[in-house]
Length: 79
Image (tube, rainbow, N blue to C red; front, side, top):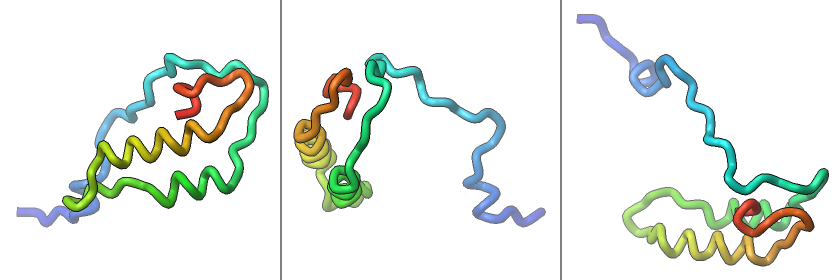
């Protein structure tokens, strides 16, 4: 029997899946996400550990997003 590497077993096969189109289009021609906002989101990333609560993670993420407003973009789009 041929040996198959773990990498080959975990590699995507066949089709590439594209994300679904957004229900909340961006209606502004330009916007900027500050490095501070990006750092806040990265700091509270969810790893899926048993000690993590996904609902708490989502609540924190929504709080970070609610601190930022961009003209022409709804809060749902920003999230």
